[in-house]
Length: 104
Image (cartoon, rainbow, N blue to C red; front, side, top):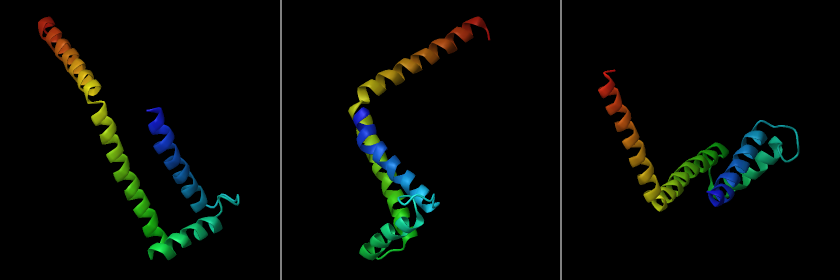
């Protein structure tokens, strides 16, 4: 999970932090609206889309890619997840059975 955090969550967090900070024009050169507009102008020129469309494409790609990566992680840890769910279901059954026996 550390690698997942380091190579996926951290870069996305940095990007989206910059995106919203620059869009709000915080005043620093890196977080200015001018840098935001110029960087998205490059995307507009290359892709032929508006800045808002590019932002939505990035957001959609982030969601889809995150779901794919989480599915891969879940598949790799399926035995651990299965054991956890079985233990949790057994604990719930035991609680329900003890309540029935107690008459609650």
